[in-house]
Image (cartoon, rainbow, N blue to C red; front, side, top):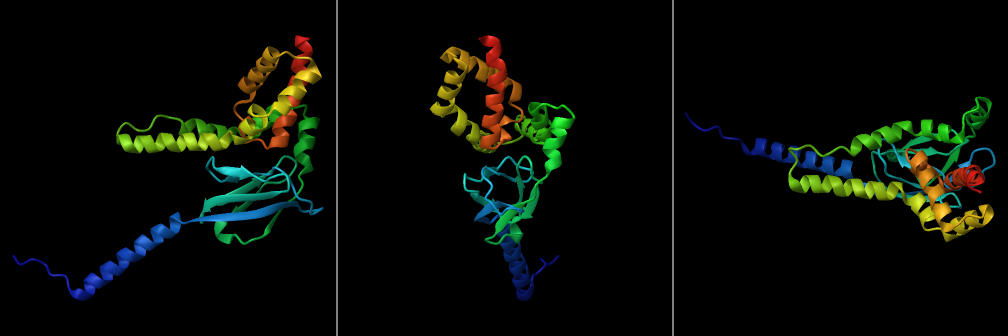
Length: 233
């Protein structure tokens, strides 16, 4: 039985197909840096600390105090812009141009919280329930059949995602002497009392507090200390 001979033309076709597949794979994994400014659609004022997430991941960032943001993403990612009091907005990175992102107000969001008598804590918890469930699922042990090096990559990626997810809390609460001193002075708390209340706050709200923008997080902490400090003093 004679071996099958592949003609030169067929070889060329196979080679070109392979190169196209490799090119397509590289294209899908291509990263790009994007930046922009988030505005209020009615007033055109810049919106500070808007939450910007890569859909179906824990990756993302926040707009700064002037509404500007910068993020490295894959070209087929979808960005989700959200902020309490505004309607969420989704944008494919493939449609990205250096442009302004405008968010429309959604007054029903905050109205519902007041009318139905739901606490802000409960509202936030419901708002980020899907993200928290997804996070808990991602924390499961890597499959036993993964190699040691692959497991290590999984765990390193989880650590990096967690570091990014908690950045706002670390920057504005853990590393903020100003917030700590302000709350201690306002409520006449000792350092031990301050950390006791903060620990209670963390235990109560850990499922959603890392998803909040800085103003929302600080506002919630202030409200919690206001309620809790009265019981201590």
